[in-house]
Amino acid sequence: MSRTWAAARRAEGDDLFCLPVQPPTTSEREVRAMTKAQAVYERIEALTSGGMTKADAFRTLADETGTPVKSLQGAYYGHARKGGSPGRSRTPRETTAADAVASATQALEKALTAIDREVESAKERADEATREYQALKASASTRKQAIAAKIDALKA
Image (cartoon, rainbow, N blue to C red; front, side, top):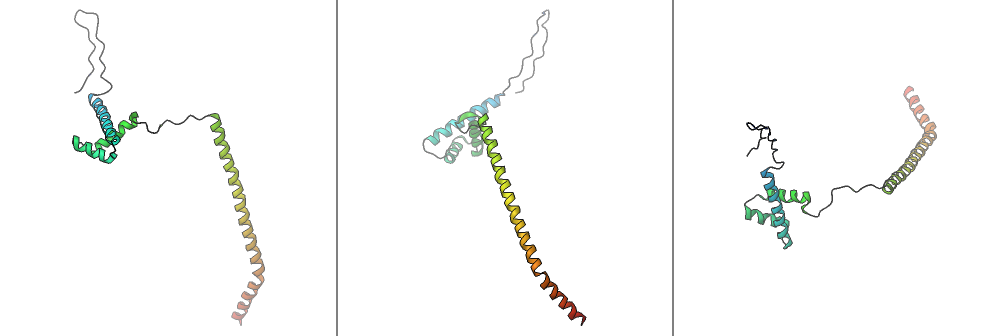
Protein backbone atom coordinates (compact mmCIF):
# COMPACT_ATOMS: atom_id res chain seq x y z
CA MET A 1 0.00 0.00 0.00
CA SER A 2 1.56 3.29 -1.02
CA ARG A 3 0.78 6.46 0.83
CA THR A 4 1.06 9.80 -0.88
CA TRP A 5 1.01 13.29 0.44
CA ALA A 6 -2.43 14.80 0.42
CA ALA A 7 -2.42 17.95 -1.63
CA ALA A 8 -3.10 21.17 0.23
CA ARG A 9 -6.21 22.73 -1.21
CA ARG A 10 -8.93 25.14 -0.35
CA ALA A 11 -12.44 23.97 -0.04
CA GLU A 12 -14.84 25.82 -2.30
CA GLY A 13 -15.95 29.04 -0.72
CA ASP A 14 -13.76 28.40 2.31
CA ASP A 15 -10.66 30.37 3.21
CA LEU A 16 -9.24 27.51 5.29
CA PHE A 17 -7.08 24.86 3.76
CA CYS A 18 -5.85 21.45 4.90
CA LEU A 19 -2.18 20.96 5.67
CA PRO A 20 -0.51 18.05 3.93
CA VAL A 21 -0.73 14.78 5.81
CA GLN A 22 2.74 13.29 6.36
CA PRO A 23 3.17 9.58 5.79
CA PRO A 24 4.05 7.52 8.86
CA THR A 25 7.76 7.15 9.58
CA THR A 26 7.46 3.38 9.99
CA SER A 27 5.73 1.21 7.43
CA GLU A 28 3.21 -1.43 8.43
CA ARG A 29 5.67 -4.06 7.27
CA GLU A 30 8.39 -2.69 9.57
CA VAL A 31 5.97 -2.71 12.50
CA ARG A 32 5.08 -6.33 11.78
CA ALA A 33 8.78 -7.24 11.45
CA MET A 34 9.52 -5.68 14.82
CA THR A 35 6.60 -7.58 16.35
CA LYS A 36 7.79 -10.80 14.73
CA ALA A 37 11.34 -10.22 15.94
CA GLN A 38 10.12 -9.65 19.47
CA ALA A 39 7.90 -12.73 19.31
CA VAL A 40 10.79 -14.84 17.99
CA TYR A 41 13.08 -13.48 20.70
CA GLU A 42 10.59 -14.21 23.47
CA ARG A 43 9.81 -17.72 22.18
CA ILE A 44 13.52 -18.64 21.85
CA GLU A 45 14.20 -17.27 25.34
CA ALA A 46 11.29 -19.33 26.71
CA LEU A 47 12.60 -22.50 25.05
CA THR A 48 16.18 -21.95 26.22
CA SER A 49 15.11 -21.14 29.77
CA GLY A 50 13.58 -24.62 29.84
CA GLY A 51 17.00 -26.15 29.23
CA MET A 52 16.96 -26.40 25.43
CA THR A 53 20.04 -25.24 23.47
CA LYS A 54 19.60 -22.24 21.21
CA ALA A 55 20.28 -24.37 18.13
CA ASP A 56 17.50 -26.80 19.13
CA ALA A 57 15.20 -23.91 20.02
CA PHE A 58 15.67 -22.35 16.57
CA ARG A 59 15.00 -25.74 14.89
CA THR A 60 11.89 -26.30 17.01
CA LEU A 61 10.51 -22.85 16.24
CA ALA A 62 11.33 -23.29 12.55
CA ASP A 63 9.31 -26.53 12.53
CA GLU A 64 6.42 -24.86 14.37
CA THR A 65 6.22 -21.81 12.12
CA GLY A 66 7.56 -23.12 8.81
CA THR A 67 10.08 -20.26 8.78
CA PRO A 68 13.72 -20.95 7.83
CA VAL A 69 16.11 -21.18 10.77
CA LYS A 70 18.33 -18.42 9.36
CA SER A 71 15.36 -16.02 9.21
CA LEU A 72 14.52 -16.77 12.82
CA GLN A 73 18.13 -16.25 13.86
CA GLY A 74 18.23 -12.91 12.05
CA ALA A 75 15.04 -11.77 13.76
CA TYR A 76 16.26 -13.00 17.17
CA TYR A 77 19.69 -11.40 17.04
CA GLY A 78 18.37 -8.22 15.43
CA HIS A 79 15.98 -7.79 18.33
CA ALA A 80 18.68 -8.69 20.85
CA ARG A 81 21.00 -6.07 19.34
CA LYS A 82 18.34 -3.39 19.76
CA GLY A 83 18.08 -3.97 23.47
CA GLY A 84 16.08 -7.15 23.82
CA SER A 85 18.78 -8.81 25.89
CA PRO A 86 21.03 -7.62 28.68
CA GLY A 87 24.20 -8.21 26.66
CA ARG A 88 27.38 -6.21 26.40
CA SER A 89 26.99 -2.48 26.22
CA ARG A 90 28.32 -1.13 22.97
CA THR A 91 28.74 2.41 24.27
CA PRO A 92 32.35 3.22 25.06
CA ARG A 93 33.32 4.13 28.58
CA GLU A 94 33.95 7.83 29.14
CA THR A 95 37.63 8.68 29.43
CA THR A 96 38.54 10.50 32.62
CA ALA A 97 41.56 12.72 33.15
CA ALA A 98 43.12 10.05 35.37
CA ASP A 99 42.63 7.42 32.62
CA ALA A 100 44.24 9.71 30.05
CA VAL A 101 47.23 10.40 32.30
CA ALA A 102 47.64 6.68 33.06
CA SER A 103 47.48 5.82 29.36
CA ALA A 104 50.01 8.52 28.44
CA THR A 105 52.35 7.42 31.23
CA GLN A 106 52.16 3.80 30.07
CA ALA A 107 52.93 4.82 26.47
CA LEU A 108 55.93 6.89 27.54
CA GLU A 109 57.27 4.08 29.75
CA LYS A 110 57.03 1.73 26.76
CA ALA A 111 58.97 4.30 24.72
CA LEU A 112 61.73 4.36 27.36
CA THR A 113 61.99 0.57 27.27
CA ALA A 114 62.09 0.63 23.46
CA ILE A 115 64.98 3.12 23.49
CA ASP A 116 66.93 0.92 25.90
CA ARG A 117 66.38 -2.07 23.59
CA GLU A 118 67.52 -0.07 20.54
CA VAL A 119 70.71 1.02 22.33
CA GLU A 120 71.44 -2.56 23.43
CA SER A 121 70.83 -3.87 19.93
CA ALA A 122 73.13 -1.22 18.41
CA LYS A 123 75.85 -2.07 20.96
CA GLU A 124 75.58 -5.77 20.07
CA ARG A 125 75.90 -4.95 16.35
CA ALA A 126 78.89 -2.67 17.05
CA ASP A 127 80.57 -5.35 19.18
CA GLU A 128 80.03 -7.91 16.40
CA ALA A 129 81.48 -5.48 13.84
CA THR A 130 84.52 -4.90 16.11
CA ARG A 131 85.10 -8.66 16.46
CA GLU A 132 84.81 -9.10 12.69
CA TYR A 133 87.28 -6.24 12.10
CA GLN A 134 89.80 -7.70 14.54
CA ALA A 135 89.48 -11.18 13.03
CA LEU A 136 89.99 -9.84 9.49
CA LYS A 137 92.93 -7.71 10.58
CA ALA A 138 94.57 -10.64 12.37
CA SER A 139 94.17 -13.00 9.43
CA ALA A 140 95.00 -10.44 6.71
CA SER A 141 98.77 -11.10 6.59
CA THR A 142 98.31 -14.89 6.50
CA ARG A 143 95.71 -14.66 3.73
CA LYS A 144 97.85 -12.20 1.76
CA GLN A 145 100.86 -14.56 2.01
CA ALA A 146 98.75 -17.49 0.76
CA ILE A 147 97.49 -15.49 -2.20
CA ALA A 148 101.03 -14.20 -3.00
CA ALA A 149 102.28 -17.81 -2.96
CA LYS A 150 99.57 -18.81 -5.46
CA ILE A 151 100.51 -15.89 -7.71
CA ASP A 152 104.17 -16.91 -7.59
CA ALA A 153 103.20 -20.52 -8.41
CA LEU A 154 101.23 -19.35 -11.43
CA LYS A 155 104.11 -17.23 -12.68
CA ALA A 156 106.60 -20.01 -12.32
